[in-house]
Length: 148
Image (cartoon, rainbow, N blue to C red; front, side, top):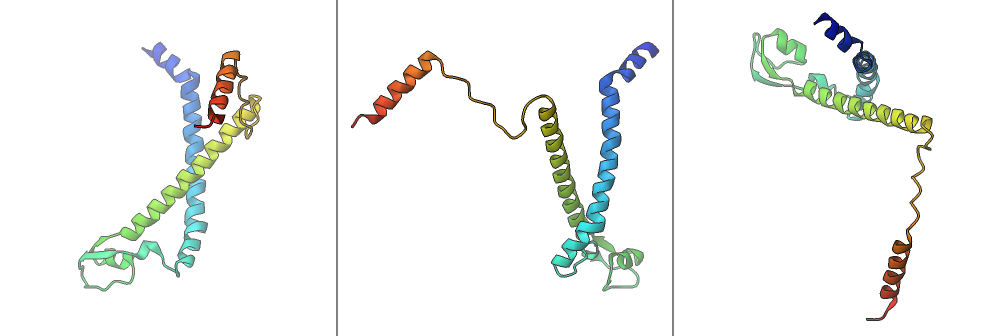
């Protein structure tokens, strides 16, 4: 059993997966810092200085009763709140992270194609037509040119 586990753990796929997870976590940290520190304040400024984290709805008042200026004040008072502003922030963060990962994967795929000898942005040349295909193409073109 130990031998089988060693073989499994040392296989290239497991090591590659571990490296991918570690780099993915680091990449996620970078993107999260970018979203929280740079992008969300800019989006908040564009929509009139709205801080999405403090957008909430009170379902049940706490002690003391509201209105509450911030989400923190409402939760400290023991109010039951729908934190839909935090939810909006999370959705925006997810979309940005997903787009960043998409761009990263696209870049890696282009790099891989370039390394393998393909030019990343050039389409593959069309294969030459066979004699049968050329003949059928000529027949099609003649039929199209005939008046009805």
